[in-house]
Image 1 (tube, one colour):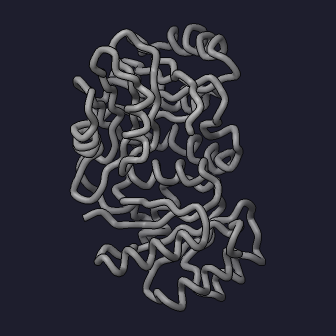
Image 2 (image 1 turned 120 degrees about the horizontal axis):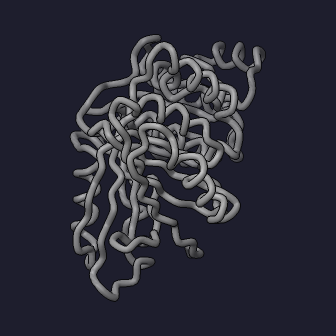
Length: 318
């Protein structure tokens, strides 16, 4: 059974990045947008026999100051592992948090592996391992079906991170789904799709974060540590957005992953479990910017075989 952890922060982008990284490392993360929501979820989990093993707690919440919430949580759940998340390096905050029982203090830009290790309580651990932990899922809809209605039915489902209508000759909806206890991302997506009328069929791509060599891995680690707290590091509402399925030569996957990770238009990158495809989420000021990135900076790279681009259709969610 995957280790349940609670991510508490009022910044949606921060929660989603950490949720993605922790889920791929075998955790079962749940999100809370403020302190009161966090307390309710902790109580509900304990009452239902599904307690959390750890909490990642933002230091600056809108409703309850982080150190005070840490004290409240620690007094009621003394065995719960609690890691404080700070926007900047602050020796005074770290000292105060340790004095109140925090098991660790990390910056918001800390790599997901470091966060996972802190929550697991081991400098080497990356959380429990499991089967397939996440999957991109692309849905075909029956003729005449309104994709917006399907989006509303799917986007609040368990484990759904992204849920978008896309402009594509074959597919109409794109999802990124993370796993729950005893599941993989593809199985959870299939269960969701089976409950929604009008979905004709779907295809899933199980994904992982690739293991990087000692030569290249530190560059990704340090870049994420330095820039992971920037708003531009994450998906931003209102910008042109597209998915790109990049078929690659397996021998070039690691080098392409690192090169594309640093590309300014890439806000999410995952490797297919098959080892021959990268899935990118790209953003730019307009679709012409995405086109230039795909045509001028990705398509010609050595090891890239073909690219399938799906533009996200923007619409106002009610």
